[in-house]
Image (cartoon, rainbow, N blue to C red):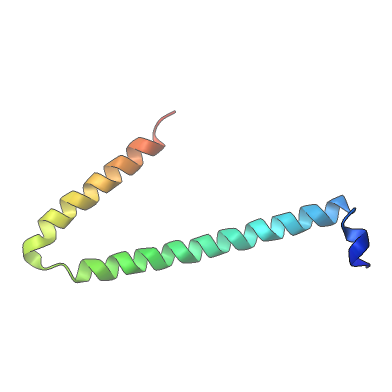
Length: 72
């Protein structure tokens, strides 16, 4: 099919938008998994004497996240 024709083809445009969204979401999943892996690797570097402080900080971050997402 002529690529020029496709600029007027609504179904083709929708399909391309859906594919772009899909690949964007796949990349976001991969980026988030990498961030989680980095976080867990960082946790391994925390000495036992500081683990309780780390847990308190993590809980504070999680509480802010839940508070932000539970409005509604």
